[in-house]
Amino acid sequence: MVRLRPVLVVHYHEISLKRGNRPLFLRHLRRNLERALADLGAPGIAQLSGRIVVDLDGHPAPELVRERVTRVFGVASATVAYRAPSTLDAMKAVLGRLLEGRSFPSFRISARRAFKTYPMTSVELNRALGAFVLERVATRVDLEHAAQDIRVEVLPAETYISLDRVEGPGGLPVGASGTVAALLSGGIDSPVAAWRMMKRGCRVMLVHFHSVPYLPATSQAKARALVARLTEWQYVSRLHLVPFGEIQREVVLAVPPPLRVVVYRRLMLRIAEALARRAGALALVTGESLGQVASQTLENIACIDAAATLPVLRPLIGMDKLEITAQAQRLGTFEISIEPDADCCTLFTPKHPATRAGLAEVEAVEARLDLSRLVTAGADGATVEAFDWPPAPAAVRV
Ligand code: ATP
Ligand code: MG
Image (cartoon, rainbow, N blue to C red; front, side):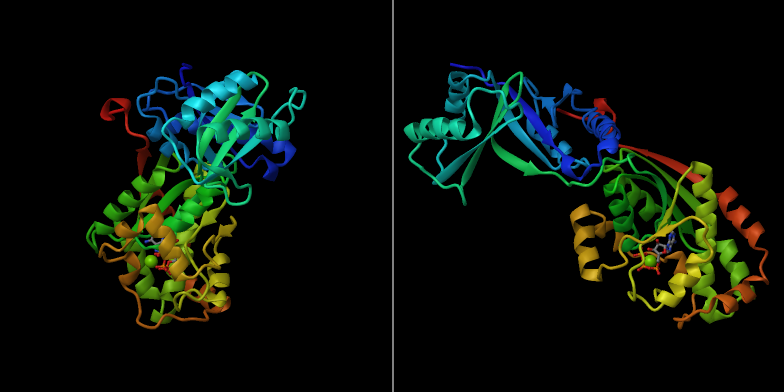
């Protein structure tokens, strides 16, 4: 009886890649896969014509490997497959073992040849292996709605046969698109915004503004918990904690209540931009969604944008709260975000913020502030914390 030799076949959406980007994409994808599996015995990873193959032979926790891989951006799907020499008899021997004890009402064989000089066509392989299945299992062929899809990938060196496939998150590998700085509050939206940028291949540095000692340190604890969760998607993170209470106090003394929220946001952007430039980040990210709250009107957004020179990306701008909340729940950030806390923007915040702040008006009141001193104080006063994932090998049982 043949011994089954499992591998994990990782597919990516190569089609969406421009030719010149492919080597970069693959370099980051491979590095991120290695990173995500570092504490699981670092299984061997090989790049083979259009897919990446992770060796699972003898691995004690293949399902854990797959679970990790299906959370790496850039991965379209991950399939546990079994290696066979590329002869019909060898394929049948492996398939025969895989079918042992299985039953399914309908099936199809989906054969693909990665090299077209293989002596049998895909259709011939489908027929031969289909007949083989029908001899062993009481089932029928259904090409349209098969209960069981049996995939056969014929590569130059060998063939991979698999019965199940799990979708990955898609997107681009973290690192392939450069670094951005995300403004992370303790709310529901900004962690989702940061995650969406990771999904587009960005490494995201996180910037949180707190009002200690005017408010308790709860918001920092939430920011840390959120970053720990987000780090599972980018492996290393840096959280910048900016003391903002003193800055807000100065704003309160100089700025009339309706304009304060816009002025706070503009200061936050300027400080985040100073930190971003020091770290080589190319854009800023916020969790704003158009019209979600009184302060997120187009007029206010335009006014806030004018304070930044780096592009301000708002990945949630067209999403509604229900969609954002559902995403936060899937990510596991929702539970953290809804913990009660006094956000720094509730401190010194007026009941009725301006919904249509005019830039001239805002600039006029800002002229009463020593902006460059405030920005420097915020950026230089920031503390940085580093996050790492997965945990060190010793701490994990495989
Ligand atoms: P969130 O759920 O992300 O807090 P929100 O709907 O509460 O968003 P606002 O309070 O208007 O909206 O904040 C808009 C954006 O400004 C946030 O998504 C975030 O990017 C940024 N922001 C607000 N407060 C802070 C803070 N304390 N630290 C860092 N960024 C902040
Ligand atoms: Mg908020």
